[in-house]
Image (cartoon, rainbow, N blue to C red; front, side, top):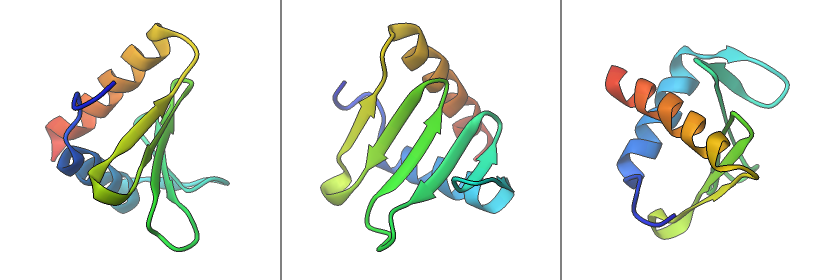
Length: 85
């Protein structure tokens, strides 16, 4: 999956979750997605619906998932939050 999601959209969703989400054991959770970062803050993560999105240097990202349905559910949740921003 390349170029389906813009980097600025990922960052906007991450920020929305961090600002409005509830703290859980992984980070902050909001509308079905959890946002967190690594210790140095250079890589951020969005997790939900069986998908882990890793976003890092040079605005590159990678999605880890087992089933296409998981990806579709994740992208729907991502889109819902993008529409709020």
